[in-house]
Image 1 (tube, rainbow, N blue to C red):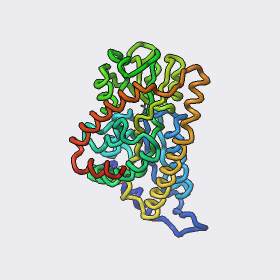
Image 2: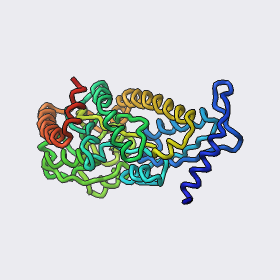
Image 3: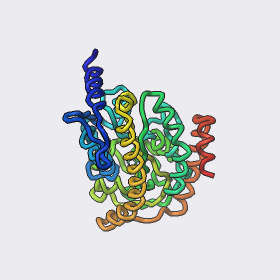
Image 4: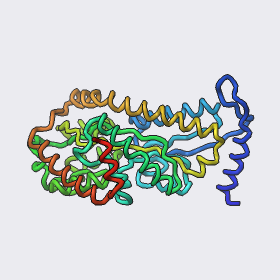
Length: 332
Ligand code: PCA
């Protein structure tokens, strides 16, 4: 038996000591417990991270502490690009990632990052409902269980100068955080530079990037007012984070614990989407108060995004095949 298998077997024995239900709570034999590590990419104050912390707190409470999940936020255990593989291989038992970062591996994972396709929370939720079975199937094939997914607030453009249209970003160094934003940069004649959320402030300060597309949440998390001046509210798309569990770790849990995980995931998904929408206006207000010129995207910029979005939608549909078509049909 390898160390990991032995540990899992021990956890299994311990957790199968799961007792009867006491006043609606699951009772575990004394000392029976499993410990999971859960790397997440974003900062502690970020609303996704806070949501994940509530999720694990609910699990701890409902299992009377028997399933103890340690959240390692801000890429402190694994960086965003390593998290999915970490969960897949069982290096960690659970993790959170930005699903569209996986779009080079399979176009379906980029369902949420095509500008202009789903630009509101309602549309994004519809798109996600259509995409979810396809995402779940792919993760399952790779040995993972997808538990829940939450959208970031709508994506707008950040810059250090007045912009009339996207043409004004030609030649800039434009931050990319997934294949879609890299393609977006290329299509507007900018140079894509991949920078993790935690490194945004430094990248602006050292001139590695001049502009970016992201949410008000990330603008506030990275204190955008310290190094840029303009935010254009664009609602180009709402990319999503997903929470994944290693399938062997999940399957090793007694049915009652699996049910608790599923229930906590469903609550976290609802809470996360609601908070994302609720907090969005506050992020923009904070940025305005801190001196950023927060303004609606000018008509020429909206027209440019539409054009870029059409190109990207055509490219995506080609790569995403029949499954992609089915997902997009979910929007109508
Ligand atoms: N924030 C993340 C991904 C999308 C978003 O709004 C980021 O900028 O890295």
